[in-house]
Structure formats: C-alpha cells, structure tokens
Length: 209
Image 1 (spheres, rainbow, N blue to C red):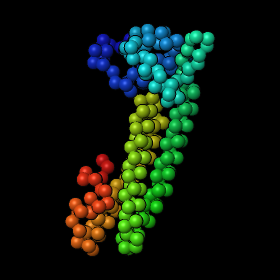
Image 2 (cartoon, rainbow, N blue to C red):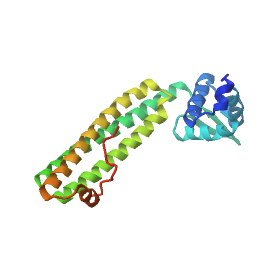
Image 3 (spheres, rainbow, N blue to C red):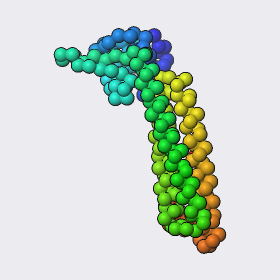
Image 4 (cartoon, helix red, strand yellow):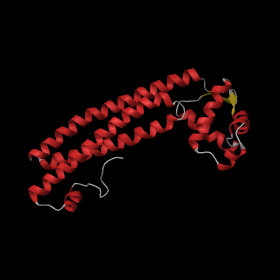
C-alpha cells in the first residue's frame, strides 16, 4: 500500500496512469469500474473519483482494453499486449522522425535557393512554413514520448535518442534561418525587425533547448 504522505501530496495524471497500469499488470484480471475505484484507491493511492477519468484516458490511448457484457463494462490490460502496443507506438514515432528527416532535405534546398537569390521571397516563405511544421511535429513527438515514458522506460529510451537527433537537426535549420536573415540584411540593408515582421518570424525565435 502507498504511504499516506504520497496521498496527501496528490498524484499527477501521469503518476495515476502509471500506477493504474502497474495495478493491471500485477493483477492480470478483469475489473468493473466500481472494483477499480475501490482497489486502485486502496492499493495505489488513486482517489476513487479520478479512477474513471484515468482508465478512460488509458483506453483511449489503447493501453487498456474494455468490453461491455450485458449492462456491465469490464476493463483489463495484460503485459504482453501492452508490450506489443508500445512496440507499435515506437514504430509510429520512428516513422514520423524519418518523415522529419525527409522534409529536412527539402528545407535545406529551399535555404540554398534563398542564398542564391533565386525566387527568394517564395523560398524564404517556404522555409519558414517548413520550419514551423518541424517544430510542431517535434513538439507532438515529445508529448507522445512523455505519455509513454513512465510505462516502459527502456523502450522509449530509443525514441528519446531519435528525438535528440531531430532536435539537433532542427537547430541546424535554425542556424540556416539566421544565415538567411543575415544575408538579406547585408544585401538589402533591412533592419532585422523589418525582416522578422515581413516574413512572420516570431520575436522569440531561437534554438530549441
């Protein structure tokens, strides 16, 4: 049983999700919602009022199965299936990283065109749009990794390494953005603030930490 101190402190959503998955893996059985509310509070320190919300989120993420038999809804999750689900999720994340790497090539080509002064306005616009897409993709990717990391640290470690590679690539693109801005400023004597405003570059544009 969890210590009273941790109950008083309150658990985050991710801690509750992790503890509920531990509960299912330990029990290897099926449960009604009322049973989950009672046992998860007693054994895992998850308040009964939040059990429904947590188990629903796990069902939505494909980590917990459920089925309606008559008027009753049963919930379960077995380690073997959870491992398969995480492998599929890992594969999906890796595929998305490959897509980012593929788009990186297009972005690099757009930067080169901008440097040569060919179709410079369209090229720079494409560059900024592409960069925004990469940042959005990376942000979503990191959110997905965060969601699964507590349940299977070993599997997700590989994804983290790939995400780090993606981050480094994004920062190289940021280097190129700054190079293009410098080129525009030197060639046309534009103020940096004017360049930022014209091409929609945010004031806090910077490298990803």
